[in-house]
Length: 410
Image 1 (spheres, rainbow, N blue to C red):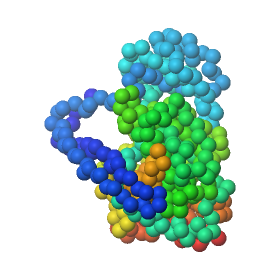
Image 2: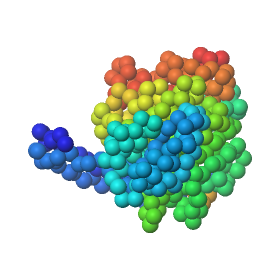
Image 3: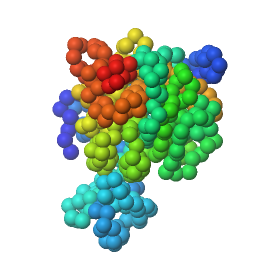
Image 4: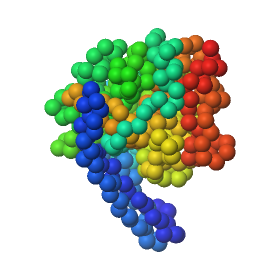
């Protein structure tokens, strides 16, 4: 394993959810915020790079051509695997077998199988996490001209798919929204934390509250692919196999926009399905990540063709924990944004998950107006330049402008 030759500093940020309460009538905030905590870890020279651990510890994913599923079970048996689920991802014509490794190291086993077998591709079941949000003070979503655009369209006729945590479908703010849900596992409705992230993102997308929803008349297909860890209700994770299933379901529904407010490492399976969505003309929007890093390697944000959104505040200042790099495409409101939370509550949220949903909502508005699939070009031409002149690694092409974009597609 390659050693470090220089001292490296890694900063781990623990994002702490700030639980506030906002009246649906007057939006008064009871701020109970706690400052983020920062820890510094230093790698000493010649200390080996830690082994990768961002995958399900006792699972392996076997991928194979969809029409050749008969032999994969015997191959699994050959390597001492115990199949737990088997499906076909129709959008990419690929079979996927998820199997228990029965104590075998998934990293080592995947290398062995890929070296010896030609009929399958073995991969670790990699972990993705919702891009964390914090809850603070209010900032209007109308900085991008959404209120003006609502006079013309609110997204009717467009379908947005969000791959996230399950949502509180019974929230009053969603009662008249057009929502279909598909959860890949049983939802613990007593654990509001397990639905918080998805509910907040859904609120920004399609809430009927005029201060919250960007595209309130759009249809929402909500796929719950992220679940809480046992005995850790706020530790939410989604495996690459579940994310791939969710993306495949979005493609099969012929949606127009896919919102991915989560982050993880490079994963060939997830990238394959995302690329299929882009090839079909679906607009895919992802969160930039909240790690505060330069040159970040966050996926799915780095996949070519994905529109990556970073977050800015009311002064058009970059959210200080937003990741930065050449992959940033647009900035959108993502600091102190009013949205919803499980149990009929209203919250104020900060993070690139929120700005991603804002961009997805704006894309839905523009598609509804003219059905122009070249939305990226429209947004690029009309974005308001921020930071250094021209495209940069902090703001991308600049702050999206729904009103300016609408004006050139009329």
